[in-house]
Image 1 (cartoon, rainbow, N blue to C red):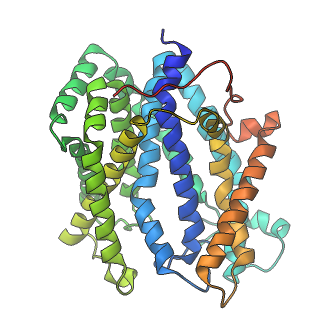
Image 2: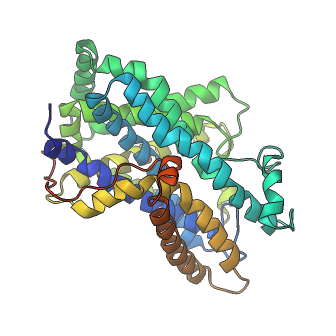
Image 3: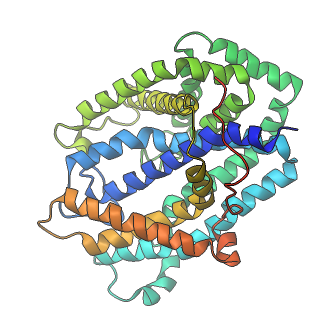
Length: 396
């Protein structure tokens, strides 16, 4: 049985990257109202290409990174829990907060959306019953950013038989074979191929799917990322491949992001997007998958290369991560609705939204963790323990 210090050492890079990914998600959502290439729930009359580029930089890797970390956490969770306890943890951490979030956090977003579009003119109390009228965007009912909790819950359920098998002798041999395939310099990037294959297969099977916005192949590709995270955490030689190759992955990731910047900047991006499901469209989304995977590997390797971890930040970050994720977008939508004005530079408004909504979200998180009922509704972990042990760096 591993000691608590040893286990926390293994999970330190995961906790650190969760905080990094959460900050990135927050930045994406705060920038979306000013993104000239997107129409979000609330919109600034003044847009900024720089903030649009910020979204394009973060979007390819931030949710895949979250899923990769969730897969790695699943390995460690099943290391100390039976299947029933594992599923129970997922229900308490994902499904209950999903339901609570849909009932409490999604309605204000729909309300401010409808207010700004001129589709509703009453109070929030008057609007709430109408939240259940139809499905967004033609209706009001939606889960908005809470889709991620639903996807994680489904992934935990459908992958459990596979994950248990991968812990068997035959499953471990399969992971060892994959690790051997990925041992050559740069070969860790081959693990992006399952995401490309899954997306292409779904496009072939459902050619009339709505691309980008409602194409569920974009959600399904996260299955491959979830399994990859589980395998990397469970197979030491795969993790050593990450440790050896993360700098190569970083080079590929930076090159990908620079290419995205150059492609997006001239003209109107939405008018130049490739036709679904043309060869160039497939090539674009294949490169998108490789870029997201390269950033995830680079960040995981970089985090593991650290010699020290901020112990208090990691503990408190783990404690507040769930409520912060559930709360933050609703706060951003409300803050943006009241702050955006004609003639105000979008960068200035964006700064005000970032500072105000971050402070307000943290304040609300601190209220949530004070009460047992709200801790249950928002899936809060046990209170942080920052005394009596020390986080050591992960072995390379």
